[in-house]
Amino acid sequence: MRAFNFCITLYFVCVICIKAHAQKSNDAGMWMTFTIQHAISKKLNLVIDQEFRLRENYQRVNLFYTNLGLDYKFNKAIKISPTYRTIQKKRLDGSFSFRHRLMLDVNFRKKIKKITVTERIRYQIEVQDFNTSRKGKLAEQFLRFKTDFKYALNMRFEPFYSCELRYQIRSPRGDGPLYDNGFHRIRNVLGVEYQLNKKNSVNLYYLVQSEFNISTPESIYILGIGYALTL
Image (cartoon, rainbow, N blue to C red; front, top):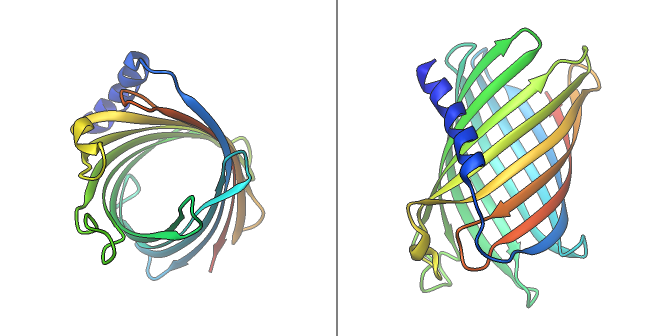
């Protein structure tokens, strides 16, 4: 619990202290996600996600990705989730950049009456254009810290708010190395999850992503919709 409380405190301190020193560009987009979950055992779940993203004011395809992962529950409070993601990101010339990402999530969950607080720590490593780019075998590495608050309004509705900070460990491409070992991005999300029945749920959310402490920061405003099916 000390580690859990420390992570939450770190979030609020970082959010308060963040200051951007460069003029930002703005964009808007949409994320649409389809999730399938299947219980392999009482503690182990198979999770598959398919997501499609638009950007440039909803006018241009940004990327597609597919997740294949496992959720392992040690107990009611701790869950570990290794995941592989394959990404197809569209370039401005219409071609696609193919990327591969490995993620390891550790989740700490605490329920306080109707409020559920979850702290997620993610380590991710990613390569892009592995066989077609000179730097394709150089891996980006990040840590991502996310705090999520859910309120059980009733049996079906759960409003939620989350805040995520991304810490850049190493980014060897472009000007990435200039910003290694630092925080450069924050996401704030406000939404609601609706349980249709025991096997089906949908969620709607609004996400604001802001970059800071880099030369060309960008803010993105995202409308998101997700549908989850439990088999």
